[in-house]
Image (cartoon, rainbow, N blue to C red; front, side):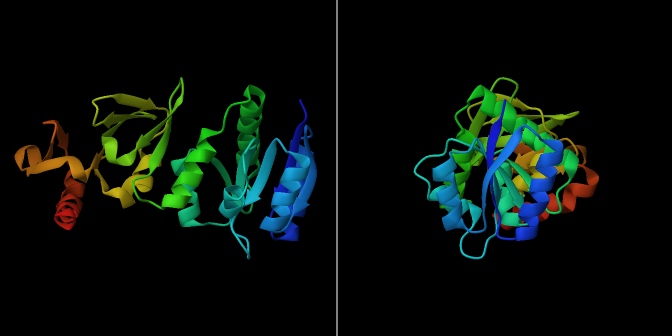
Length: 250
């Protein structure tokens, strides 16, 4: 299956480097056109109707997110290419989308392209990109997070998440509705992502939304009692962090 692709990046050497990598490692991906700014990027997307877009986030005039927001519809997959951009990467991770940091790691590149090819073959509607654009429009005000399960990707408001619990390489999300969602990612993948939204790591295996904490119990060296009467342990090294976090939210 041939994949039509375009590259949009404001640096010529980055475009050239990516073309070399694609030719060497993904011969079934054909670069139809390249652009070095948002306006030209929109034009080549409309003209070539690509299956896949390699898109830089940071460009001088507008961002890659601006480009996506200015398209009437999105019928392609996106792999974001970026130097480190904390806010941009946060938005991308919330929507379970793929991104590559410059300089590009070949193994990560092949994995990202492989996942994009799978979605293109299945002709899936790209709800993840829709979630990203909503996130960019509303900022971090009550965003939804994409939770990929074995059967589907769920989009859950972070204000509906009571807590998360780790089991090996899996994380279970406990929702306010009492629903449980098992995700094939580690708790660490979500701890940093949810930290700005009043989530705190109480223990190696537990991440809690402070909005649902009823009280701090001194039993067993420290335990959080939640509004639903569940108790979550606090590890010794996290006790002071928890106290400070609770005081800050009062």
